[in-house]
Length: 302
Image (cartoon, rainbow, N blue to C red; front, side, top):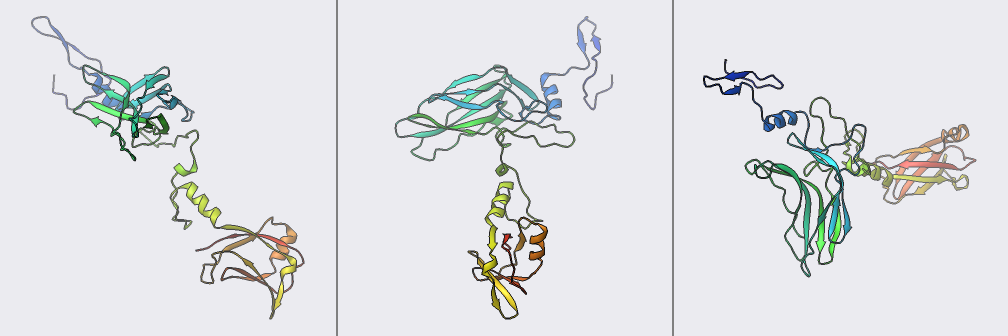
């Protein structure tokens, strides 16, 4: 048989019988071969049920000051899949008096012959008086060990103080994605706008997250009132100035509109002749004194 240039899967193996009657096969694949193949389809991370959201899969929770529980779940590491069918309790040692440390709860894939399994482990960090270092994950082909972090624990002489979830962080664990075709985003229960990236190129906002952009907008939005009684005569106009801290005459003109936008208010709003930024606020001009109050919203410019 000619030398095989490209291995493939699946193929039937042909039996080869030598002169002594020993049987061998021309197409033999091992677990590592299957893992390599599956690894081209599924990225590392926690597996989420179809149509589901990230919630409790492999979630680490504090059960008391010296123990945590790992919720059941499925995980993919380098083409292999691990299944935790029921919650797993893990003991955590106290830190020494006056000391603190950071421990990590990890799922380890160890393919050494003497181990050859997935297993939950606690990686104990080094103690320090303050600001302890976070223990590194082992990801070493030579050692045949690959660890993914579920959570880190801050531990003191009084036991576990905090549990920080690391499951959705791609650097430490992440969510397994199909690697072929388009990767749709997977919703995460309890996820927030702070975790969603934002490109402000078009809007001009400087924030890099959705939450930051919202906060930036809220910070720069003002609800104000133009009372009917506050218009004063100034030359050919009636004018009214409202105070807004931080406004200057050199600012880019803001976006101003009325709320709510009813036909009557629209008619009155249409009589506003000019709006200009002044030191400490906005100045409104109209050619006739308006008979009703206007509720306005202002979005600050640069």
